[in-house]
Amino acid sequence: MRTRSRRSMALGGGIAAVLCIPPAVSLAAGGATDFLLSVGHPVLASSTLTVAWLASSAVDEASGTRWASGAGVSGAGAGTEWLRVDLGAGQEVTRVRLHWATAYAKSYRIQLSDNGATWTDAYRTADGNGDVDDLRDLKGRGRYLRVLATQAAKPSGYSLWDVRAYGPGPASRVPESYKAPGAGVPPEAADLTAAPKKETAMELVSSAENSTLDWRSEFGYIEDLGDGRGYTGGIVGFCSGTGDMLSLVTDYTSRQPSNVLAPYLPALRAVDGTDSHKGLDPGFPAAWRAAAKDPVFRKTQEDFRDRIYFNPAVRLAQTDGLRALGQFAYYDAAVVHGVSGLRSIREQTLRARKAPGQGGDEFVYLSAFLDARAAEMRREAAHSDTTRVDTAQRVLLNDSNLDLIPPMTWQVYGDTYTINR
Image (cartoon, rainbow, N blue to C red):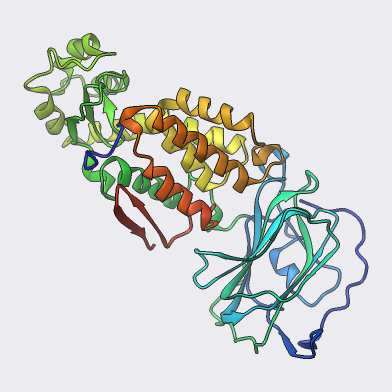
């Protein structure tokens, strides 16, 4: 595990009352004209319980249809879920009317965005009581409106009969090329194991570990950072002093017995747990760089990274009901502190906050996790620069980007990185 960048040094039950659908133009309390902006517009949701409870049901003109979120992680259904409406163009939104089914949100936010990635709160509450929330005198503008439910009142998730957004309008026409989503989780809300999300995770880690987004260029990286862990090398910083470099080379040798690193296995066993180079100098760094040209060694690094760090961290985050950002936060902690260190930070967080899989608020839990992570880093001199948490993960959290949806911009060690795809 590299210690620092080398450059640093829902389903609701019951029958709803008949809802009177507001007309396309209504009169607000002050007499000003409000245009209904949301009916019939394209909608995405983080999840859908079945094809009978589509996201589009929340913005249709029927009184007996509704959206219901999926069952959630391990059946908990009480984590963060969202419903996003494309208003077609930038709109000023002054009022939002929500009609909740029995499964309602205790904590939720109304958010607006110009690009569907960076969100601004127009309203937030931690005291939702269900039924109808008619939120007036809102101030905000954006093409996209999102209802972000962060804590459910009941373990069955969330369900909305209607989402009605109003503003001075009139509403803009949505391109016909936009296809209404079907049931299930849209690609943008996928777990970190989905290929595009995993690529984002690798780039985020590489920005901190290698000062580049091109993590594939780092298979041959190797140097001693002076952090007491001997040589650090490869795509996530395998170290000669912490055992993972020894395990990696052992695995590589089992796949490719006649390789340039195999002769150094006795020395790697001898220096494990120390910062010594005895038996490794002067040839080991050159041998490492030579091995990096071998596709088998590159594949071994990727497989070892996934087996030792990525897969255990993501599984643990999924158990806790975390989305892609939370899964990445766990993975990054595993890379730096090991999975045992990740578990220690997680246990400390769980003593103070409930994870979303236990009915907690995902924002509150992740904020507490990042606090505990940063505190752990500051206890170790080699980890004292916490920008990979403070100006990267926390920035994404504050942007409400729980699904790691690009475009996204962050900083590590003063350098700025952007993913646009």
